[in-house]
Image (cartoon, rainbow, N blue to C red):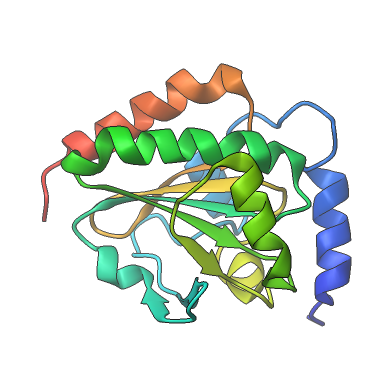
Length: 184
């Protein structure tokens, strides 16, 4: 299958999930797996990217034992402006229980990131997926933002496409259930 250029992917994502239309409802994680989204239900997620701004390596496997929220976003995505501050609040509230939250950016040019973070007052750790290889090949992202809730064993348990305030209570309930599970 030919690989789409990042500009085509960005345009498709902008049209599919990051327009001014209402956010899509959360996906059933099993449906996402059946449709080819995310990792297989029983296999830990595996990928490596670079941290922003210094470029240090990051491996998702290093967070085994923690519950991880991975939010895939871009600076041109308006719903991402609403989602990231919410995920930052969750990171603060649940850090002591083992929650780690990362913002996986897919912008081709990271120079827009500092302005976006300053405007949104977000200080979450940012990971760079400049060629969108993790987003395209590993996570099978179809819309922006897309958020993955990953359990302590590294398995994707919930996938949410889009962002809307009416889903916040559900997101919190899902995270609290994952955090209540025993540490391996």
